[in-house]
Length: 447
Ligand SMILES: Cc1ncc(COP(=O)(O)O)c(C=O)c1O
Image (cartoon, rainbow, N blue to C red; front, top):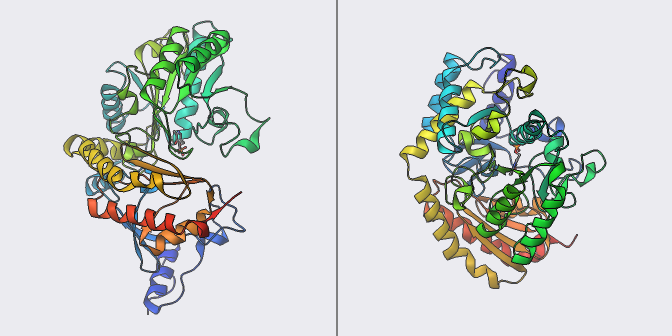
């Protein structure tokens, strides 16, 4: 028998071990105090209780082991618990978990900023660290507005953004999300109104977009776009041609281009960054999620030397006015440096190519399935869009019963696994998706 309390902080762990030893039901920790994101706590299904992770597998408290199809919101690109990243985190935690970047710098942040600059907007670009994708977007928006202010253009404070966009949950980021279709429609009137547009796709739409930009340019600081895939909107994809047209037009009218690659960065679309499939280089780039291999919260906003030059001055008021407590967090930077080392030493982009081929081979056939309106596949992402919305709770349970973890968004079932997933595991996920679709009427609702 294990004594019940040894110290304050190991109580949950001990309770857990007691339950496992004595075969008792596990405590329902989620419903008592934990407030889950985007969840109606009153009616939500009981969430799966994960106790450990390994590679592409989640182990549940009831002993089940699931193959994870979505890599914790697309972050765990090297799989879970990669020893190279775990070792770097442990070593950094022992040496120096965190120091503020006010008046202090440290090796991990210096190294990471240098590396990120070199692989993105050029060696002279500047990297600002924060702790979430939403904040990376806030910083990008503030950089764009302050860039114009520092140059004396005080009226350029608004943004062009796109239908279907999702850039995060803080107020500035919410304001550039899809106003109707995103989770933020509740906050109309609270958010600054921006200039939402449909992503243009035809020559006629490119012309209409250009005349819109031309009319508004005097009050616009920048355009913000998720290059190639709007992942949170249900893996909505647009073409390289659309992206090239948008950026060319914005450049022509002096509008700064912000690429939000929080979700698409680090190989997800088949190239290291999605914008690299186009002819353009953004003025400002937002990164997050897979930056640390999904292990620790860290995000980055990167600006070209030209953008940065508006801040580099003898006037202290021209300095970038942003400073999160945990900017450049040492453990986060150590994890990100280790993750970049894995990208350098492991064939991650080749693995993405292999995943893409398996997804195409297994899932394209669903284009003809009942209830399916579209199958979209790019890089290591596959989305099957259905005519009806899916009940997320029922879907999670149905997938778990098949030994996998898949969590649909709205009416879209999708896979975005770790890049280290084996072909048999990925095929198991694809089979589960097909079996799920065969049982569609039971897991959809028409609202
Ligand atoms: C493109 C994009 N930008 C920003 C965010 C917000 O990132 P975070 O959840 O880390 O704040 C997300 C999250 O899904 C995203 O997909």
